[in-house]
Image (cartoon, rainbow, N blue to C red; front, side):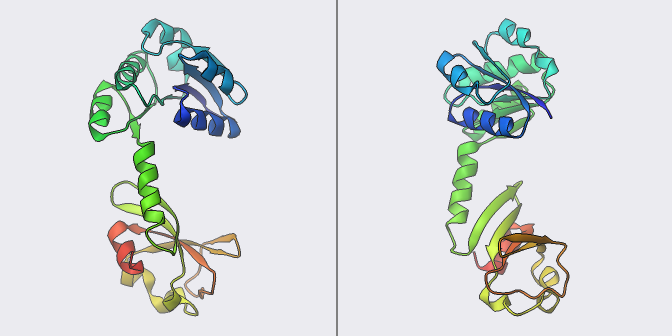
Length: 215
């Protein structure tokens, strides 16, 4: 269980708070609007109404006592910048900040952000890739070049084994699991034969995956 300071309870921040609460973490939620804090109290451990650009207000929260500080402010870049700088100065151990644009991320890094998240950009990428092909079921980007895809078994693979297809050598991708009848099978052997309605979890570079599956 981790202790999390979450600043900003807009749509993005609210969903973070709900998920962290569901996972059993202790969350201190902060927003300048009383209504947003009140609405979050059913799924966070504590809440405070206040201005996160006020360093003394943040100091009173005991920033250094939290495992993670998340700045989820989305509509006020100046406030996000000032909050980020103040949290870092007050000893934030791990500071994760939301950004809408690459130029914002650059300045937030300079202000002290350890990690940057792009909810709109990441969701847009996922949507574009997920629905660009009928056989892509899910997608998770790993940095700029690598990704994990869940993908339907191609027709040309059905009835053939992993060994027979020589997938790793031929396509430079790794099969990390097979989903069969809704159940995930990991550590799949080279003798495994693909069947109708199987789906795969594959890991590889974007280029290799796109080439292999004609994406």
